[in-house]
Image 1 (tube, rainbow, N blue to C red):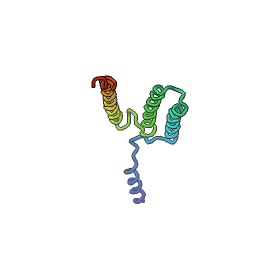
Image 2: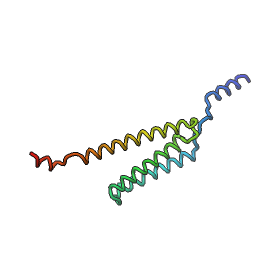
Image 3: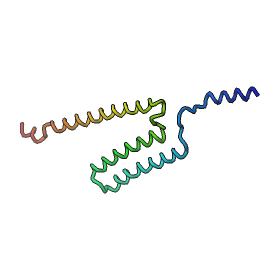
Image 4: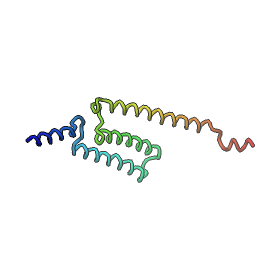
Amino acid sequence: MSGHNTHDAHLDDHHDDSGYHGSYRDYLIGFIASVVLTAIPFALVMTGVLPVQATAIIIVAFAAIQMVVHMVYFLHMNSKSEGGWNMLALIFTLIIVVIAVAGSIWVMWHLNTNMMPVHTMQGMG
């Protein structure tokens, strides 16, 4: 009988109920949403029904939505997980990424507009 209690205590040490681990239904919803969020931009690119700029904007939007789907349904991130620290780390990461991407685009845009055109340089010589 004492072996049974020791075995139960051993199982309790390795069993962690503190985090949400998801259900089969959650994984299935996440998988279906991921497939749909991948198939729609793929179809737009393959058919070419929209202009390139509109297609690119839609692809970026669907990618952002798909990242949220993955974080919620597969990584189980929400405002309650890990006492809110996961959400705080995510917000900090997003701020850094937005600053880096926006700064890079700003620098590239201004470098492109402020560079001397090639035909002007040829006329100088």
